[in-house]
Amino acid sequence: MIHLRTPLARGGLVRGQWGRAIVLALVAQAVFLFALISPRADDFSSLSLVTASGAHPFQVEIAADEGSREKGLMNRRYMPADRGMLFEFEREAPVAFWMKNTYIPLDMIFIGRNGAITHIAANAEPLSEAVIPSGGPCVAVLEVNGGVAAKIGLRVGDKVRHPFFKP
Image 1 (cartoon, helix red, strand yellow):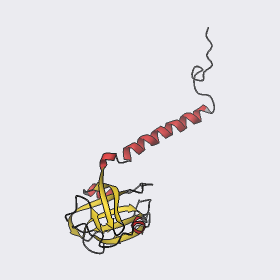
Image 2 (cartoon, one colour):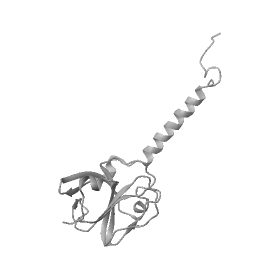
Image 3 (cartoon, one colour):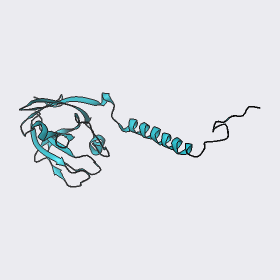
Image 4 (spheres, one colour):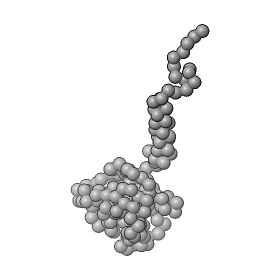
């Protein structure tokens, strides 16, 4: 007769190994869920903010339909420094945003049809339901991490380079 000493051969996991098994299962589930909600590399478009100090490249997700614009960057806890989200609208008009269910501070950059920046709302407060108006008509809004606009010296009148904007 063969006598096996492994925990599984005796009918299950021994004390202490259950905890590790549960932790491993939770980690695997978290990785799976992160993969489902994280944007893929091919979901990004190149964009540049052109300031007096030069061009500053970003990779942006595009929110071009009602569903993606409603969701925006909600429920995200982190965004890399060179990333953002570009909200594209069909026509130029005043718009307003809020930070409900948005956990990271954002700079909201309002942009006209020609790619000129019309207004900047810096460091929008996470989880706030306060309305953040565009201050006039715009055709797009770029959201980047809070503080980026100040860091690169972004000003009203500076330009955004992206295929969506007509020079």
